[in-house]
Length: 145
Image 1 (cartoon, helix red, strand yellow):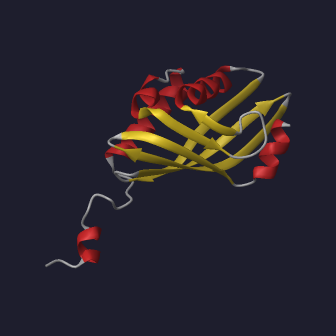
Image 2 (cartoon, rainbow, N blue to C red; image 1 turned 120 degrees about the vertical axis):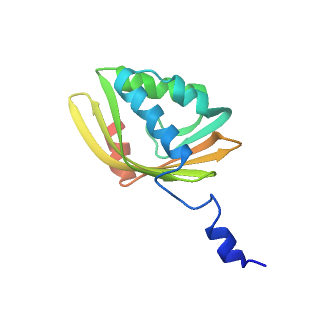
């Protein structure tokens, strides 16, 4: 009988930069960022998805899928309040995709750049939950105040 450690290490649950979920996330984010087409992100996300955004700014809180994607697409396209998300590292497995994003926000003539870690939880091939983690949540809140 194989040891639990050995069988676990041989499973597809190892975090990898070469996993189908990683490829899907990277492709969908690239399409949204380059063309403003959010359909691949919407397709990989379950209808019941909840995005958890920390802080006390206008984009903080728990967001259902369609509202969260609408807000992100608005912020990506709005010249007055603009967010650009650039993935710098993505790894995952069947259950999770971890991203480190360089987020550049512009608002009221100001610019804010921050590293944001995201955890995307998958179930049955779809993302069901997203958690954002800011490196400096206070600075993020202050920028959006």
